[in-house]
Length: 136
Image (cartoon, rainbow, N blue to C red; front, side, top):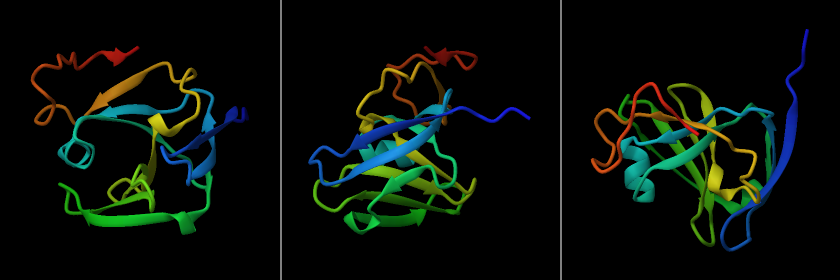
């Protein structure tokens, strides 16, 4: 059985209080999310990376969290820096998955493509999206 190749990355928030390492698949699952939650939380779309369990190493004592109900009625928990409030991850109960905000990685050069999600009713009208297209 072939094991997935994992690559170690580093990252931080804008103020530098949060520093982390994360093991990502060689070809990670990257999404550009247009949902209302991301739009309201960040003021626009978010590029996120699906995390495997235990992939992220961070000092959790430096994080705050906010939990609310998403559109499905299931909870969404956001973890962010206590100092600068930069979002680090979001845990989506509906899928039992955590997502890392891609922009916090020190290097984004290995992130080669992303799939648009939740754009049907919530994307900005000036962004033209082809349902069958991956952002490359």
